[in-house]
Length: 190
Image (cartoon, rainbow, N blue to C red; front, side):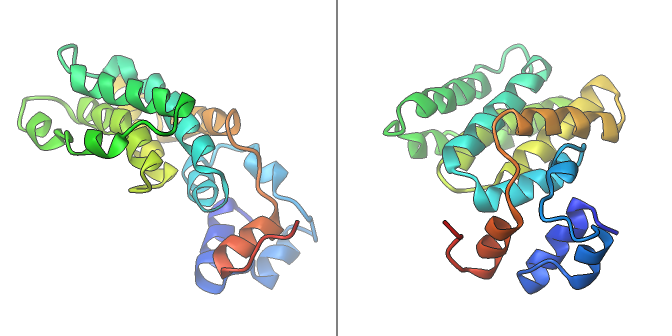
């Protein structure tokens, strides 16, 4: 196989793509064709290792905006968290650490909300959590995917394909050299 998941597995285990993965790709030097697909979760995991934090937060904000309508109508804190992350994109000196101290998911989970709404709340907080280095973009994808699947009753594949489009709008396809460097601890080639 030569999917993004297979590449991610090779990188996490060995720091480089396996010979099997490379030969299945026919010696292709890029992963552009895979990046164009709908594997949003694996795209997000790879991007977290190589993309600048600002791009990760911008993608997470777009993802959170996608599921914003699934938030409980009375939940102003989640909307505020998303707005703060968007402001951080304009002014990275904004103190998001304080915002993370306001994390209230435990209170929200105690209310009678469906899983889709709870996942939307998580997705609204993820951009701030990514900005302070607490989580990766894959968290935003997982939370939004769950919100979409449970709140709108669409397939997992359709939700991930839509989220992949949002990732591509903010993050360019990484090169194999960038990924090798990120997973092996080397400096990326210039």
